[in-house]
Amino acid sequence: MKRALILIYILLITLDIVSAQSHAERRFRLIIDEVCNVADLLPSDVEVRGSSQGMAINGRYAFLMHDKGQCVVVDMKRWAFVATYVMEGNTGHCNNASFGRERYGRKSQFPLLYVSECRGARACYVNDVSLECSRLVQKIFYDGDDISGPADWFVDNRAQYLWLYCTVEGRRTLKAFELPRLSDSDSQGEVHLHEEDVVKELYAGEVAIPQGSMKYRNRVYLPDGVPSRNRRLHVTDAKTGRSLGVFDLNHIAYEPEGVAYKGRKLYMSFHTPRDPRQNRIYRFRLMPNKE
Image (tube, rainbow, N blue to C red; front, top):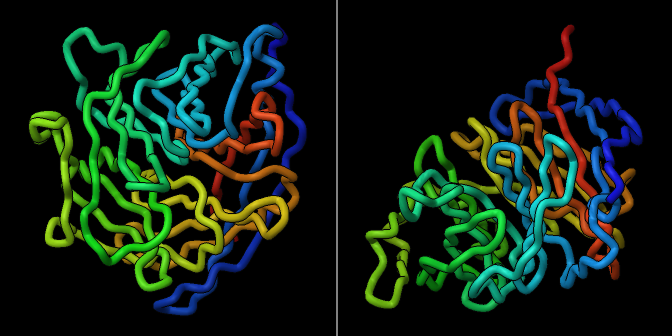
């Protein structure tokens, strides 16, 4: 196993951000470095199936999702491979993933992990996970007929909301619901949310090809694009819905996917087409410039 903590580059990107409300300019710099190619950590006999998709971080461990449910667990403190397994019942695209706070039981190793089916019924798979295996303990659905196309889910632990990232009449939209508990499940282990359950709704911005999504403090982070088109990172104010910036990611040759915070740094998973072992992890820091 080859350890990887190779600093490839640090890029300083400065851009003007125009407020939708005040049109006042603000300047930020985005500091980016590649910290890991998961292929360098994997034993040669470990097979990875399905494109790299969502990513969730809890403590020192990153849970890297792949299309159709394979999960690769990486120790971010040692940048070492821990395990891989196929998550029970997570048969969809697994486009996004995030941890909540509730645990399945006292002996659960981690809080519940919420994974987006993305396509099809657009379910949110709720999982009790460990370093060795998982079990599906709940499914959450949105039964409103106002959305179209794929949709993702992410947990807001501070507000205890479950956000639905979707498309409404051609507009990328964020809908917040009170985060269901396991005890809210019906006899089938499901929770069905409706339009009247929405507690907050925001415009997500001009996102062309939605990828992962997550909220940290008062900012929502939304990667966008594929290698054949523009790749960008949208940052949206979670209180007002106004854009805090759109950052160019075209200098990174891969497809942006899942996003998660660890400490004060944003980590993003990138998919390498036709090679699911080559899952690249980048670290981002959004810093205000001092005038």
